[in-house]
Amino acid sequence: MPFWRSCYRSFSQDAVGVEEVALLTREFLLKADCKTSFGDIEETLLWSCEQRAASLAATLACRPDHSPVWIFGYGSLMWNPIFEADEVASGALEGWHRAFCLRLIAGRGTAAHPGRMLALKQGGRTTGLAFRLPEARLQEELMLLWKREMITGCYLPTWCALQLEDGRSVTALTFIMDPRHPLYESDACPEAIAPLIAAASGPLGTNAQYLFALEEELTRRGMQEESLSRLAQQVRTLQQAWPKQA
Image (cartoon, rainbow, N blue to C red):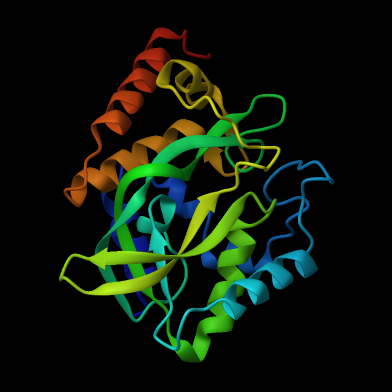
């Protein structure tokens, strides 16, 4: 069984809600029209198929060697990768930290009521999962990944040195926030982003659900981040204080 299928099943049984994995599936992404499937995205921000293909080609042209291609997952890729992988291992990335610094206008937010999506900013250290892609299906799996992550070209796909839990050092593709992108938000302090995350929702569900699922996945794997847990608690507190809709 491909890894993405087994991961999908285990999360849907154990997590706080099934909606996360029920909506963003491999089948959904393969058929998705990026202009409409994730919400109303401003045309000037939306990348075309040709732009995504050019970005992928440029990234592969910088592949440092002929060793296997690894992907570093630090957000929803950890529990819902949807691509096939020959191997999965815990790993640590030095020099980057998680930050909700991407204005979320589609998927789990809208332009009128934006949320915040996760990205990586410089400094610190991040733990997550490394996925080794099958060479025979490399192009197919990466094209799907680009369709998922690079809808607006907000990330910089970067080859980074990754230390795996078993001591191996590998080079992994990592999606890092592009600070020049118009959706980049420099203020990622909890007081600023908690109300946004608590309220935002879109075609793929709520922004809060993403945060809670990430918190649960990190806890399950022994990778808890105190700052992220505090943010999740702030969001819960805000939601509990709001009057419930009839």
